[in-house]
Amino acid sequence: MSNQPVSLDHALASFDALWSPRVVAHVNDYDVRVAKVEGEHLWHVHDDTDEFFLVLDGQLHIALREPTGEREVVLPKGAVFTIARGVEHKPSAPSGAAILMFEPTGTLTVGDRHEEIPNHIDVTTGHALGI
Image (tube, rainbow, N blue to C red; front, side, top):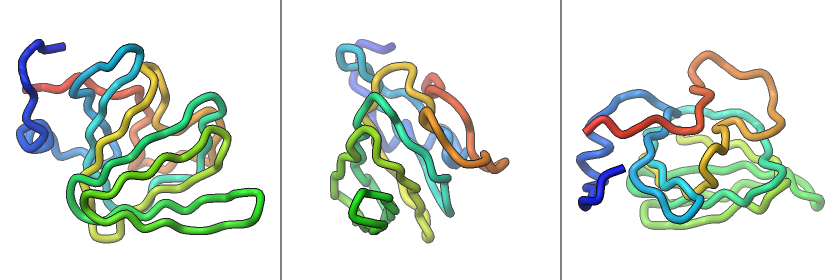
């Protein structure tokens, strides 16, 4: 990891893959990841960790399955949202988005439990930034 500032614009410009996050920094035992997203991810859950999202560009939709039922939150550019551990969720971005996430190092993009993984989803703990 670099000990120099990282431009998020440059980081996002360095790759084209969707739903394939890049690790731009570490904070204690957490990764700071950026990703380009478009279309739908998959229903999944992180049993032991919350998941933090910041929308850098575009709009992110997150469907949630909570004890009171299903709901969807819509996050415009600049919005943040945290999904509590154990809550099943499905991110999507109908028109595309760029997002930043905080997750414990080693957290899989598909969580601990998930539906069948479609081909367009990269099952990863985050890729090194190639800039």
